[in-house]
Image (cartoon, rainbow, N blue to C red; front, side, top):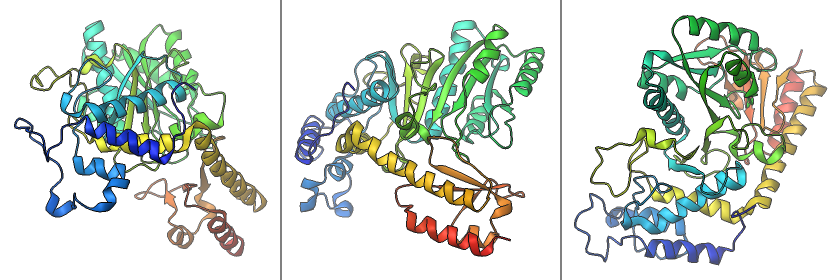
Length: 411
């Protein structure tokens, strides 16, 4: 652990106050050139007394714009204080959680996991074009059928074909035989370069992909590929509960990672995080943003610096050990639920070291699903599964109520 340490409330307040003092102050400074200001004081009460003890809210009122990528060169000097906060967040996550080498990564805090995933696809499409003179028609995205719908958006926006690989129904693992067959068909149709997205916690199942299921077969066929990890859901729980994580930067195949702070970390929406190895993000440099100090290498452009402060506050409140204790409690509640379902002989899927339990729909009546707000795998077609996500507010008492209901309705 290099930088992720727990700090006191007074230390956190002092650090954020200092960061804001290093930003432009739209109330007092002579700043004529920025198309931005603090939040409207008639609406957001910027003189409220409680703000002095609420650093995240103070930052929202100050309204810092974090345009640019602060791990690459210079950035807009008007917001240098909170930009440094963002850099500290990225270092904690890249180095302490996902095992990158210090100063050997780039990234930014995005608007969400969808943007961060599309950023990765955009980088690798351009990488193959810039490095290998690939045609877009020669590039293909590869994911499991359980992957997040952001990949469908990215495929459509970037005009890059997408291969959805079948998974085994019961254990949600990649069907390697079908993958190799589909890959050979893609090669026969002119595909030469591949962007692989492996999941660390799929949205419906919490399932975690084995990257070797992809990379071994791709290497067997001597193919060019880049591997992105979608850890939007699992990134703040899975690495803390297992010591056998293959989906971080200690794996030489992994080039980038998406994490969502507004899921497990309970940061405000939308707070996604994109991390990648050095010398990749430059493939999406927007040269036309010449009036921006530094380089704009992000999909969103302008974004809220307050989200970076919110993530920093959470990380520094817990520290790494405190965060482990928090997610360990969720794991224990998940274990408890699974034992109750086992006793009732109810079939479900649960990825080890994750806090999602997905129950076969045959065991859940529509009335129960509606009462407990269980999410189906499809709202349009006949669904096969309902999921329970054990977030912090889901306590054993609520789970016991569900179990009691299942006992009375089970035939």
